[in-house]
Amino acid sequence: MIEAKGLSMHYGPVVALDNVSFKVNQGEIVGLLGPNGAGKSTTMKILTTYLYPSKGTATVAGVDVLEDPVTVRRNIGYLPEVLPLYMDMEVRAYLDFVGKARGLSGAKLKERVNVVLDACGLRPMYRKIIRELSKGYKQRTGLAQALIHDPAVIILDEPTSGLDPHQILEVRDLIAKLAKDKTVILSTHILQEVETTADRIVIINHGQIVGDGTLEELRRRAKDGQRMSVSIAGERQDLERKLASVSGVKQVEYKGQTGPCCDFFVHSPANQDVWREINKLVQAQQWELRELANKPLTLEETFLTLTEKAAIGAKK
Image (tube, rainbow, N blue to C red; front, side):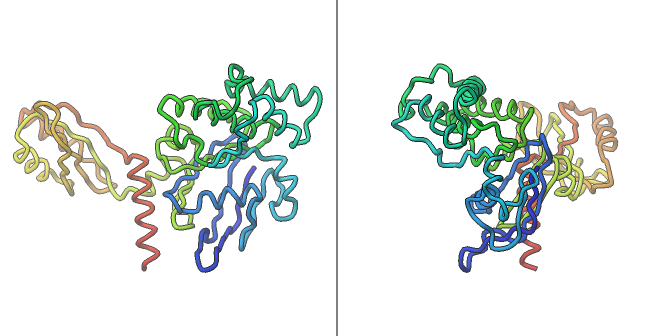
C-alpha cells in the first residue's frame, strides 16, 4: 500500500532524510520509530504530499505522490501531531465541514459522520464545542476527521502525545480496531506505543533507516550474544564470582536485590547457551534459585543498540 523509494530531504545544508526506502503492506500497522529530529515527521509529510522530497519518490495505493498528489490525498487519512481542529466549532459541524471538503454530501456524508462518531466514541460529544473537550476527546475528533472519507491508508503522527495513561489506552484500542480494514503508519518516539500496537517496526535515526522488521527480527539484528536473567539467594560477591567462573560466561551484570535474592544478567556468546551449566552450579552449591530465564532485549535496548551501531558506522 505504501512504498518509499530513496527519499531524501534537504533543508539547505541540513539533511533531514537520506535515501530512505521502505514498504508497508495492506492491513499492516507499521511503527515509524525514532528520536526527536530523526526524520519521522518529514517522512509523514512527504507521504501525505505536504512536502515534495529533494530526491526519490513514494507511492500510496499504487499512486505516485509526485505525479498525482490529489489522488494520493483521497486515499489517505492524516492525523498530524498538531491537531487540525477549529476550536469554536461543534464536533458535528466540524465533521460535516471536513466531510464536505472531502467531497461527501447528502446521505453519504450523514452515513460517514455516524460511522466515525461510533468508531471514535464521539457520540456523547456530538453537540460539544471542540475547545471544551478533554485532550483525549480532541484526539478522537482528530482521528474522526482522518477517517471521515473512508481512506485505505491512515497516517498518524504522535497520536498519543500529551495524553494521560487512560486516554493512551483508549487511542491505542482505537488504532487496533482501525487496522482490521486499513493500513496504518504510526509515527512516534514513544517505544511502548510501537511495541504494543505495531506489526512491524521501521527505526529511523539521523534521516536514515537503521532497522526494519518485526520486533523479534530487530532483536536478532541488535544482539551480539545471549542474556540470561538469574536470581539467587545469597551474598552478592560470592554469587557473582562463581557465576563468572561458569564456562562460556562473558559477563555477570548485577541488577539489584529482590528480598534475599541477588538479581543478575549473565551474558554469553550468541551460539552458546549457558543455562545448563548455571543450573548444575546452583545444584552443586545448593543455592535457592528464584529465576533462571532467557532475557531477550527490550525494544528500548534494541532501539539504542541499532542506533548506536549506525552512529559508529557513520563515523567510520
